[in-house]
Every structure is written in C-alpha cells, then in structure tokens.
Length: 137
Image 1 (cartoon, rainbow, N blue to C red):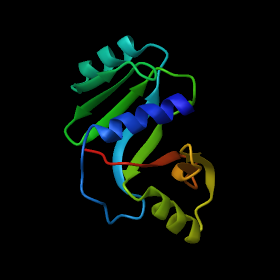
Image 2 (image 1 turned 120 degrees about the vertical axis):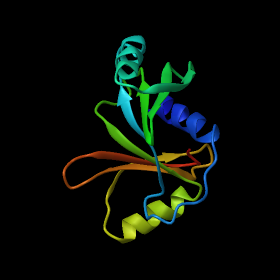
Image 3 (image 1 turned 30 degrees about the vertical axis):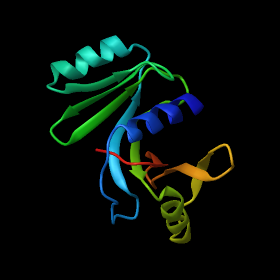
Image 4 (image 1 turned 60 degrees about the vertical axis):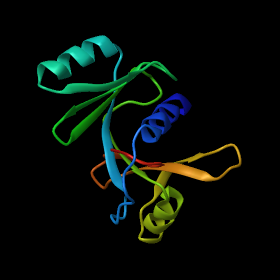
C-alpha cells in the first residue's frame, strides 16, 4: 500500500486544480492494479485512451485519459480491484467531515509526523474509494 500511496502523491504533485467544494474532493482517477502494465496500456490505448504520463517510481504506473475520464494503471500487488481516487489540498478536514456524516474509514494514511494525509473507505455497495491530500488535473 505504501508504494501505491507514493505513486498517487507523485500524480497529485504533477498538476494543480482549485479546491473542490464537493465533500469528497476532486476526482483524480479510476485506479486499476495490473500485473502487466505494457499489456494494460496497449489495451486502453486501443479503446481510444491517450497516455498522459508514465512513471517508474515507486513501481511502474501510468495515467491515461479519454476526454474527462482518467485511468491510473498501477503495476502493483499492494491492492486489488478498481478504486475511485480523489484528491483535496485539505484531505484531513474532508475526512473528518465525512466521518462526522457517518462514513466509516477502513484505512488511514499518515506522513512521517503522523498527520493524516489520506484515507480509504467503501461505499454501501462495496466500491473502494481513496481520498488523498493533494491536487489533481
């Protein structure tokens, strides 16, 4: 999970966006874990997605876009299944507000000083959702 988190922080630092007024922040990407990033990139490009960025650290990962849809391909075994990933410069405040409204967090991500920098939770249908500190395109 640490390597996935590092990749998302790198993605969030690559772009800038105004602070969202939505309770969950701004949508960043649909994060997909893959065993073979080359195969996955080729597949998504065949569907019309454009490669917007490719990175090697902390593991191979890439961002592809089609219109306003962003997919993050992550060659990692840190997690499985599609995850909706959101960003906000004040993620800790957003997370606190979500908890006060009844959302139960499954996992918290913290920096070296112990400050909350992100969290993960599930929708009532079981969809995984991440909210991380940072900006997104």
